[in-house]
Image (cartoon, rainbow, N blue to C red; front, side, top):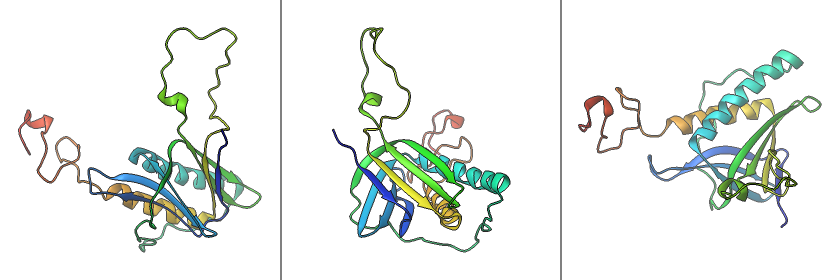
Length: 191
């Protein structure tokens, strides 16, 4: 089966966004450029970790390679909704990050979740069967190359998107639904 590599080097727009009401949101990474639009679905925790790790990557690139980094901006950048139509190309299983010293750019690669992740094998594996922990080369990918400025803008938007969900309960930290929730700190009484 052939795989697709959706490469945007650089994209016109690369953002994290959501579709749906708080509590039922689906998270997406979306890249646009060259007349193409690619949206891939992922989990909220993946968006949060991506923003965190990108910040660490930029700091490390500055420390090791002397890359000039823009200051975090206090102004609100791209706050527009996702471009439509939001058609899921694939669900992200693995995210990869790299810093290209030659071009001073950040490379983000989102790799589709493989079928092996969803299957459970019964029985013992054969001795001659090769077990590979690396992501398969035959999985679809979204590859984006960003400048440090564009990476900072992506980080800020991703953090806003993650924090825009349901507010946390002040007692237990679980998300509050509009009708409240059963708080374990109140022995199951509605809060």
